[in-house]
Image (cartoon, rainbow, N blue to C red):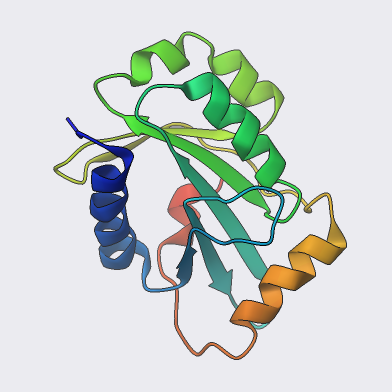
Length: 151
């Protein structure tokens, strides 16, 4: 169990680095909200953005925030500690309806996807382009992105 969102964020950042690479920004400002993490998968054809909102308990607030992140990202996830994720799972239809991913996470870095969303075009080209400029010159390589995206 996490004692704070900050503690959860530290463990989640380590998880991202180890499993998906260093291709992310933490707490991006200047967008429609401030996602905890924005991960990017850059290849020759395009760059996909995945936003993560971490919450200890309030999944309802998290889903609203994650929906806003769809303005600039292709995929958006709510990540809740594994011990409390059952409350959100009872409302999994909302996650499906709005195509927002839901995952449980714990201090052992166990990440369980309970709903895997499909990649979509962001709602705002301008916001998407704004964040893509941050990654444009990056040579960092992502890995395992397929794990986060429904086919």
